[in-house]
Image 1 (cartoon, rainbow, N blue to C red):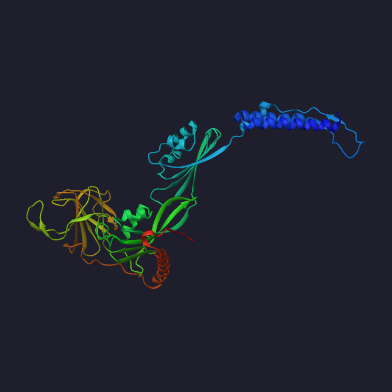
Image 2 (cartoon, rainbow, N blue to C red):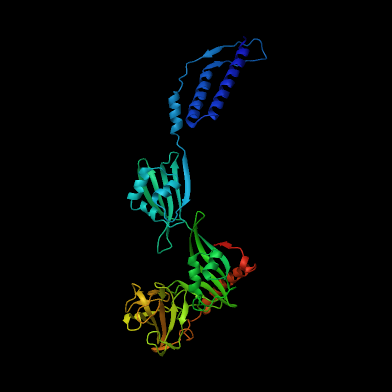
Amino acid sequence: MSPKDKFIHLRSDVKLLFRLAVARITDSSRKTRIVSASAAVLTLVAFGAAGVAPIATDSDDVQVRAISAELALPSLNEQIAKLEAQQQLYIAEDKMRAGDTLATLLTRLGVDDDAATSFIKSDSAARAILRLKPGTTVQAQTSNDGVLQTLRATIADSGSDATRNLLIRRDGDKFSVSQENASIERRVEMHTGVIRSSLFAATDAADIPDSVASQIVAMFGTDINFASDLKRGDHFNVAYETFWQNGQFLRAGRILAGEFVNAGKPFQAVWFDDPSNAQGGGYYGFDGKSLKKAFLKSPLTFTRISSGFSMRMHPILGKWKKHTGVDFAATIGTPIHATADGTIDFAGVETGYGNVVIIKHDGKYSTVYAHMSRFAPTSRKGAKVSQGDVIGYVGMTGWATGPHLHYEFRVDNQPRDPLSVVVPTVTPLAGAELQRFRTVAADITHRFNLLSGSEIATAPTAKLASK
């Protein structure tokens, strides 16, 4: 057989062996594939140990010379060990659910690591994972056998807007915990809704968070009683802040502007930053007048009036007697809010009133809150309160036949009907501040006009990235 024929025959054998190796690799278990792949490599190396000089086909004078050499072949076991040592890393992501334990969370993330579980339970900083709110995204990086490499989550500090990233990291057989301030993206979202039954039903339908719905009540609570004044077909627009991290929704922030049409009458509000304001700013109508009034219309968020300011048959005494306040029916434990800024003049028990708080306000005004089940911890004589602060909870102490709040509004210590009395207003913006406000209000008006360009009931959500 000529050298050329030998080379062709050798090349055919190599091809046949390689095909057999590939077939074995593709039809086998993981470990078998590793062994077969290593064997194929060794086979090719072995055949490569015997070289054949190039064949020149254009000349009959070329001499063919065989060359042989001893090559050190790697151990098959070494090849398998190296392949198995190349661990793959996997990333899994899931959301914290109500009732989650550490075990259920780690199982969903594909973590099978007793050492990591023990560390998280024993380390005070790592245990913050166990206190995550439902809906919080948790990300885990594991090896292919479930050993935890890193665990990451975003934690919102209670009582503040600060947000931190919590990172648990494996370093050999040990673990470390670190925290860093999260990079937060601020957006402005605009939604619209229609009242069919209640405000919260409308905000749910419009995909508006409950925290924003509560702010709508606070914004317009001096003009609209959301328990009794709402009409079917009332509609609203609202623009508010949202905060995101890596595409994940963290929380809703402050309402920047709102518009509520109640029984055909529009009420509008724009947040305006004011450095001279202790709260950093306040809500104003589109005309620049402050929406904050001296007194809220109701000390309860949602309720109904069970008895007005009038003569009535006293339920205990059984005779006609002037009712010097308004009774708001509500379940026991409903929070009671101060209707205006002031100082607590009395917090204790009085015959008939039961547990009662009396607040003195600027000038000649005072308010009374009676039949409480209990007081708020801060409700003590001499304590300062701000409009909207919780001062106690609905009950039926004193001369009460059912759970309700008896609310009185007094002028010069004389009771007046809180639903009709004229209360003082806050000084509107003027001068340079008014001009600056008009620029803000014009932008919001333009956005609301765009939002209201489609049918209110089916208008799509508009999301505007803030600058």
